[in-house]
Length: 179
Ligand code: IMP
Ligand code: MG
Image 1 (cartoon, rainbow, N blue to C red):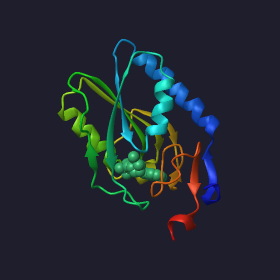
Image 2 (image 1 turned 90 degrees about the horizontal axis):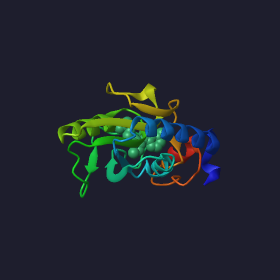
Image 3 (image 1 turned 180 degrees about the horizontal axis):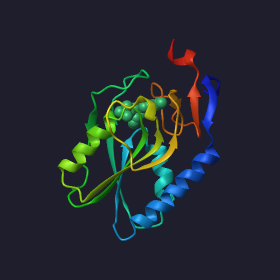
Image 4 (image 1 turned 180 degrees about the vertical axis):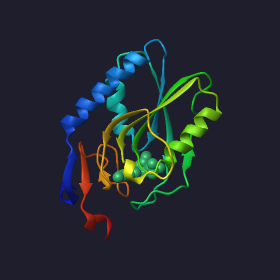
């Protein structure tokens, strides 16, 4: 797996540091709010697991599934969402946890959905921001890292479902996805 990585963009240590900083900040802001942290599977799973453990206030977990990429490296506007079995979101303080905001289509779709079900408050928190590829006007409320326009994998992010278990964020060798 490592042989497919061109270089490490963000080290395991640096990720740990930023995620724990964000967890502390959210703990301050959401003290007494019993926030509902929503993990968007599968890309956010690793980030989410670390983020919730860096928070020291009462909170609740929920999971949804989204997908927009096929097995390629180009995002699509056709967002699929599965939120079956999710608790009643009315009047909840929702924090959506995403792996990356790229074109912005996924986040825009989710934002519209959550507002339509009557949440008290909705904030988005992303590990990575790739602003150079934005197609719709949207920003996340909390961002750990800005990344250049390169396809990244690791720490939950995949290419064709692989590389999610790498502990760092790395850039994939071009020959891997241009095959
Ligand atoms: P968006 O809708 O284009 O903002 O991106 C939505 C999804 O595309 C993200 O949640 C990721 O799952 C995926 N994605 C975007 N850029 C990358 C990348 O560089 N590596 C892996 N997945 C990515
Ligand atoms: Mg995703």
